[in-house]
Image 1: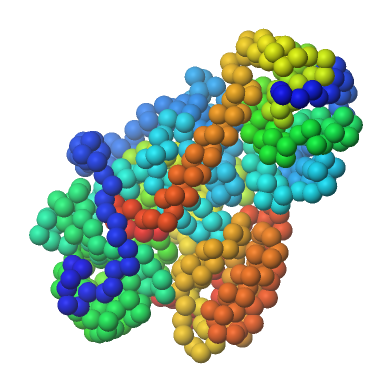
Image 2 (image 1 turned 90 degrees about the horizontal axis):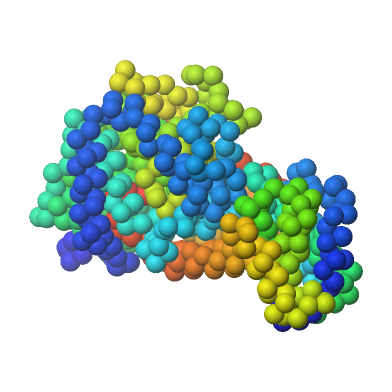
Length: 434
Length: 191
């Protein structure tokens, strides 16, 4: 995959960190989960009590609630406080259970919708279970994966100025190939190689976000995967229809976040995003942090999840939806409003991805920031942190936007609900209006 | 506990007499200001990163750790400390205001730490040990024995637990920072 005549430059080298014992454990998890009827999973809440008891005893942050792990019951969940990304960002180490071996941690760095920069603790076995939940999503569409060692199982697309790129294999999918590539022309010997390379890889699945898929659509070649996975940002209906028509395959829109992995997949038959995890409880809360009436819109709040390095107890995601259930009892997030992809115009008219902004500011330790582009293309950087850092970050943005004016504003303490990327510029929202 | 500090009785009395207004209804709101003023009073200076971390640790009123931290701040504002700031090292003071305070909050309610005589003594002795001081009238060995005696009836010993919490948090932060430069290839999508 690296040596192919049309291959891009791969900037990084990495590989699966699963050990043999991880793989045998994961095989059991995959088999058991894939053999269980979704309706049985939806009805089974027996995991919740042991999960809460473990979290209250072993996780330093939840231990401070001073609620006895022996007496906690699932019905007591409502009396527990909620947490949000600001809590994780303030003291992430306090959320890692004492029984997790620090040497085995891996991490994903994320800025998220509200701009709290975060090192999300994870584990190779956690990362490997993304595949399981993607397969559960595929099964809703009557599909499953079949790639083996001679195939490319998945290509993960980015479209950013700077992007972590590599080739690897997926032990839990028959050692099939995996490539993470950047469609930005600067990563290629010749921009016209991009489509040819994708056609040659003939990947079973192409995974990306609305911004990289929008770029994929501009290429003349039409690779034919069995499915497209859209993750990390909201997929707007116009772009979905275009992708389905062009690549003649289902586009699975996953509601997914670094903190909790793939949470739900959009299924038009169910009328929303159906929860794909088996140990995840979804609540919908109002601004008063109380559950809303059934069917009302509110903030998606989750408890549980498969990331055992970061057990979430009533984690307010910052995304909103209303909740319904399918006829078999599965939870459905209706009219989900999550993170919207936003692009920004430079002075010379080039588009920048919001991820490019994240990368450009990665070395500036602001607790939180947001960037807004006005209709006249000028910018506002709002930040929480030290003034000299904010000023330095503002200069980086001025440089990145080729001299467009950037003004600075401090975010008030305690104000933790900030949309990170916003724009009044026409066509800043890929695939339709936000 | 290597150096003699204030009189135990003075601090016990100070804790008992603490005005209840000092226990904030909404710790997040003025907590940072109180800690800031304390550090300026003690050291003429405050490390903004350490202050931010301390405020972040207690940022929400979901647990009483901020109030426990206020108990500690109240004790550290005693004239003995403000007249002898050189007797303490800044990192030890930050440990008392952050890790030790969260351990106190895990162990008992704020009011128990103020009103229960045994708890009160445990808090004062734990604070002195955390900032590496001992009661003025005691030798190092006596101070050590009495701290162990008073806290051995509890589920955990506050000083040891605070040090362990600090060590564990540092270990995790280091592991995450080390891994942050890399990205594992096991994920079949990105967020």
